[in-house]
Picture 1 (cartoon, one colour):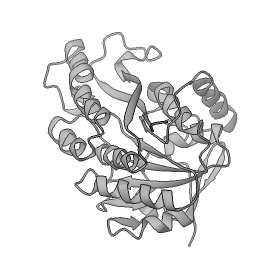
Picture 2 (cartoon, helix red, strand yellow):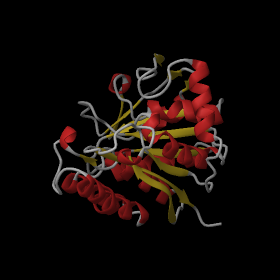
Picture 3 (cartoon, helix red, strand yellow):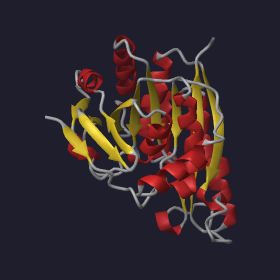
Length: 287
């Protein structure tokens, strides 16, 4: 049975009307020049916060002209599956619908850790917010949305998906969706105090612990790191992406941008006490 998922967060995380969505997507992507790679890490906040950072990662994989993009998403809701794939149909965006690569999605469900579960994606934003940007650059690309819990199975999930993608005969790229440290009273996390000093620690120390593991391609270490230090909400997605990139032969992660919501100039808050970290980076294969 095919399922068509409506855009649940259009008009909230990004513009809900086609014209305004296309204009902002074009603005974000116009100067997003990045190295080309088969996979990237991408943030998933509202575009006003993380859109410029996300655009760098999406431009990096789009430059390789993939036919399909597998998006490993964070799981903010009560999904208990190690991984949940959206198996067929389409995802709507203000710019049109992106078709699911159902053949590749079906191959993914051969792994016991990956369940077919459209319902798990209904109220999750971490994949949806990438899609208008992706579609703006690659209007005919197909997608496979996969929510990945931050559990010990995540690296094997990524390795299996990459192996199936390589065997599919299609050009397949990967995105791993996460935000970094959620710091401040809004998140109940202030180990270094309230205000600028704590926010600086969150970005320069706590985020960096997690990013250093990405750069080391340490797929097995990122989930325990996030559980200990609360520095990523999509650690399962990141672990799966790193493992997929190792299967693809990537030997390097190139950071494109690391910022946080407290640094966003468009937000009128001269003394922020809450902040969320955002990371963009691309995995590189040897030439």
